[in-house]
Image 1 (cartoon, rainbow, N blue to C red):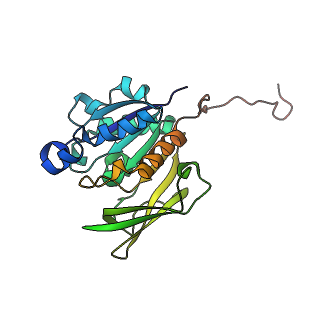
Image 2: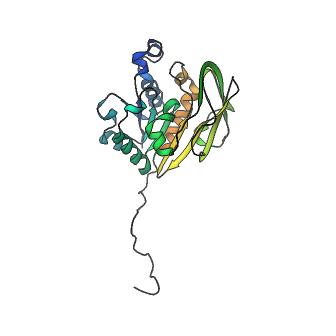
Image 3: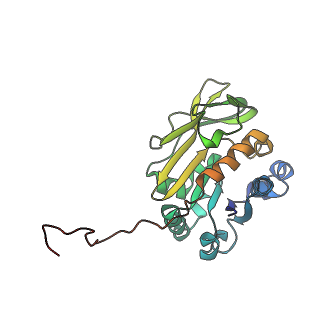
Length: 242
């Protein structure tokens, strides 16, 4: 069964900054959706300024994995949309949060912390080291991914300890960062992946594309009945009573 992926993006930088618009003429969401489609996923896109931010009940019901990129306008995402996305994740929908999406309302709601960090824009080399080489998210990836220029994110990253740490980044200025963090919340899987500043061609890098595609496959829902909750009748007799 084909995995259905919705790529969500504010689509503000691309319209307001000519340099970003030139780099991503079809939007950051368009670039991501394109390579995921080439990888065999059924993709659709949604943006901040669409009705209900493009995440209607029908869209969310038809989404196996939601990819989230936000930066300028985290506060403009409606709380009701955040609530619905969170419920879908807890029910089994996968969520991939990219780069500055660490400050999104949905990621904070699922982490329960500030999700804050250090940052610097200085055209630094980033080397993302694979620290969990047996994980499916790094299938086809070598010992590390090297990006010539990226924005620096540094520790301390105020998130819960990941269930699985997949990448650790080193930056030219000396900082390190937990740049690939995998979590389970309820029935859903979450992957936070650090690279992707809007002024760099990061989403055209084949290894970055491979990681995101691998993550989408990893995060898709398990095809099974969801657990039942609430009062339960005994499966066996208790104390000899019928």
